[in-house]
Structures are given as C-alpha cells and as structure tokens.
Image (cartoon, rainbow, N blue to C red; front, side, top):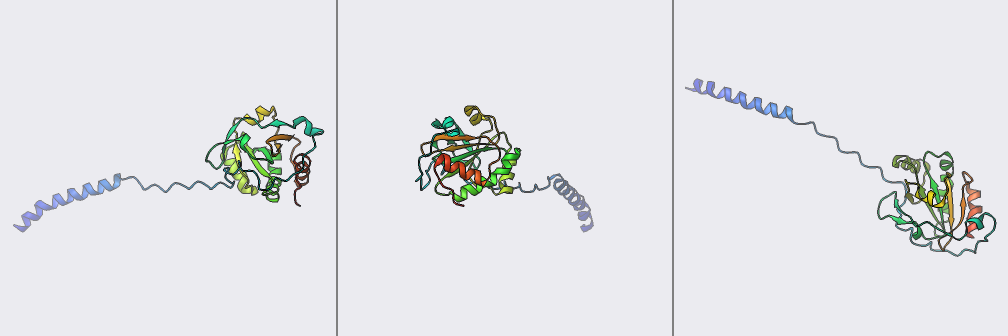
Length: 211
C-alpha cells in the first residue's frame, strides 16, 4: 500500500517542482538602482531679487563706452534657474549686478569664469554676480561648475533670447547693471581677468573691489 501511494505521489511532486523552477527562470533579473543625479554646483536663484545688503556706491560717470549703454533697462525676459525652482524675471535681479553670458564650449568663457567666481566672493553683500548659460548642454555647464569651482547662481537661456534682445552675438558677454536695474556697460572684449573686472566694476558701478 505504501509503495503504491509513493508511486502515485512522486509524479505529482516532480510536476510541482518543475513548475516552480520554470517560474523562477521567467522572473526578470533585479534592476540596479538608478544613478542619483549629481547635485548642482551652482547656488539657487531665489535671492536674486533681494538687493545686496550694502549698496553704498558712488554714481558712475556716463562717458565713453558707458554712455553708449547707460540707461538701458534689462530686457523683459523670464529665464529658468539651473537649480530649478521658480523662473526668474531678469528685471527682478536686484543690482548692482554683473551678469555674464557664457557657454562651456566657449574658450574665453572658460578662461574668465574663475575670475567671476573670485569677484562674487570678494564683493559678497555688495554686488551680485550672475551667470546666464546659453547654447549649451546641462552636462557641459555642470562640468564647468564642478571643474572650475563656479558657485554663483546660473540662469539658463538656450534660445539666445537675451543676446537677441541686446542685439549682441559675442561670447562671452558681460553686463554691468546698477542699483536701479539699468545697464551701464556691456563688455564683449574677450576673456576678462581680475584686474579688468575690478576696473570695470569701479568705473561703471562705482564699487571698489577688495584685493
């Protein structure tokens, strides 16, 4: 009796084992967790509408190159921030400010970006330094920030809207904006160094840059 029962049960056990093995083979391999997105090296943009804590500057003279651009308001543009969050109306950026238009593939841009970072550190609380990344990829801009230690806020303008509004196509392009939001000077002479930036800030915004 026991032998007959064993002969009847054994095929059933084999069938069940075969089904279980087949189901395990059909299960997809577990997927590795998605790679975390690299944190942005740049600061957020939410403070761009707040004026520097100290705006005690002398009135800039309106002569020479300054006269050509003096009194020109910033274009009515709204740009996204590299770090996300609410878009930023360019006219809401509280001056005095230096706005640098750049791209990672632009050699002079890469050369001068560290000088703009040092400017932002030396004039903290007195001057806003803002970047506008254009005609670029997010990965390219991110790598530049990481490699060159750029930390100031970056706006994104992949449609060249700012340059088209200013009727300028040069790279890099730097705007010097006073406390009233007026463009006092537009520089398109090429890569700027620390001494040139300090001179332009003093000449057009009336602000002395600490050494």
